[in-house]
Amino acid sequence: MLTRILSLTVLCSLSVSACTKRDAASDSLMEGLLLASAGAGAFCGLSSDGIAMAGEVLLDVTSSSPSLIEELKARDSSLAIISSGSGLLRVQTERSSEWFKGIRGVRSAQRNFVYHMQATPDDALYADLSWPALIAAPAVWDQRSDCSSVVIAVIDSGIGLGHSEFAGRLWTNSGEIPDNGIDDDGNGFADDVHGWDFIEDDATPDDRYGHGTHVAGLIGAAGNNGDGVTGICWNARIMVLKVFDAAGLTTTDRVVRALDYAVENGASVINLSLGGTGGANGDLTYGALERARSSDVLVIAAAGNEGRDNDIEPFFPASYDLDNIIAVASSSSADGISSFSNYGAVSVDMAAPGESVLSTFPFLNGKTDFEAFDSIQDWRHVSASWRVEEVDAVDKRLCGLSDPSGAGSRYTANSDSMAFRQYDPEGEGPVRVSFLAKIDTEPLHDRFEVLWGTGSSAPQNLLTYATGPRFQTVGWIQYSFLIEESGPIQLGFRLKSNSSVEAEGVTVSALSLSRQNDVSAYKRMSGTSMATPLVAGAAALLRSADPSCPYLDIKNALLAGGRPAPAFAGKSGTGRILDLPGAAANGGTCLFP
Image (cartoon, rainbow, N blue to C red; front, top):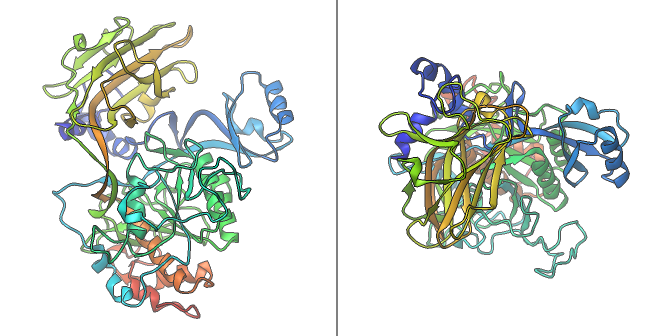
């Protein structure tokens, strides 16, 4: 049922009101855009230069001192400081980034770009894929399989820290005493034993999404232990840096902080299975990657999953013009270009297997409950502005409008309405909530909120909020949250507006809930997110054989040693697919296995 609902809603036209039927001709025209952007997530608007957080500017400052903050607020009293750290100041403002340039203490200013994961879930309908054979890994494993002499940073959604495949295979900060609440090594992060969580700003980068665990398993899941799967590195030291939130999104400020942490704490290979269209050479992420280059760090980045040419529309960070980056496309089991994979004769370097890849996963979901949206009477609501609209026999949606009159209807000013109901999915463990939403609100002032709670009253715990004209620019947004509650929950959707501009409101569709059980699980996924860690693992394996080998020699060995693939001729810089023996044979003066 869910697959059917998704196929109907994701292709919905952007030109119609949030709660009206679709136009078939518009569906056809908009299909490519919506499939590329449906997972873009909350808080951001889409423009010609990429997705960024609405109403936010990221400042690179000499110091986030009170005097600078006071000067900024003196210039604009409506400006608000969201966060600061690592030389970055994140502010909420209606000003453009250009407005901040020239202010003393501000080195640069830019929009806070959004990155998303580059993976797609897989299932048993996909043919089995054996990536070790495709990259000829066993021929090298006979000589070397231990990468523990180097540190590999995985900047992602975290790792399932309790997964059996990672026991003894995580980087350990020897300068830190665990759980004493003190920054023993003076690096600015207390108790950062295995890495850092840049979402919660703590030392427990556990994975509640799954993407990072899957990526890390391809690099360093335990090998030759008679259990589960293996990574390219049978033994590894993986630094865990969590930057993705519960909706599967991250932003420039988090990625920059994670990159700097990785470099400053000894990583020599960094995996970035993420990206977005926002960015430019010389921006803040570029600067962090350039600092990595100066420290002899090799960065492996996903080329993206939009099936387009990155030479025409760059995809960052893979498209930055830095020679310490390897941009990786996805290849099929037949050495073809995966249908979802981005490519580029100049901007993409090589490919690696990325379809139906089996790897580690931190949890299993129990039985899934699907919300049918049969009647608004199933929902408790604080005003009459919420309703259910039936698009067709299987597609119904919950709509938040103060005037539910149909096409072109808009919510009214000074409204505050909520629809909520109780759920108690079968099984044990926390509740995984997923849904699609279309959002159109006045930027900064009006907002859509997702809330949860327990008991019988309206929920008050905020999961996330969104503001801005998402309906016109992005279309359906995929949300996914984990609620740490083992009993029944109240789930609510709220629409709030001020006294000025009104817009079209919000629509919720494809709502599902299930219990999430933490286990040492495995899952098949596809994407350039899966191809990227195979190259990162290969880079770590080569570098572990000769840690003094410069990053550029490692990169050249991987590119020159790839297996030629006609499908990639003119589609990547090398036209080659990762081949581990070929890379090992192209080390030049470096001593590879």
